[in-house]
Image (cartoon, rainbow, N blue to C red):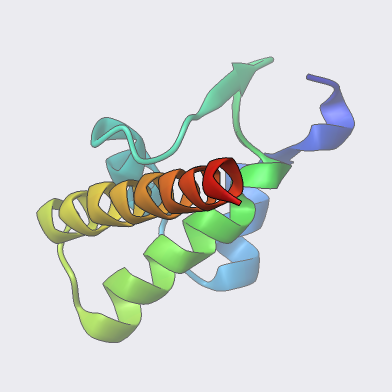
Length: 93
């Protein structure tokens, strides 16, 4: 990925007024991928909406990391099932 597709974790956290440790905790739970370049940590810019969703769930609804992990996997499963329904409808019709 090119440099334009990455955003510094420090920049992201400063602009959203959150701690960098939050992003690192998400990475520890495999909820986000941290890219290390030149001794700095980055997020892929196309992952930012997902990170912001997790951030809102955590800070606004007080959902802990274990809960975020569960919510993340449930949302993924819902997406998979919705895609399967669409595929089956297209196959039928």
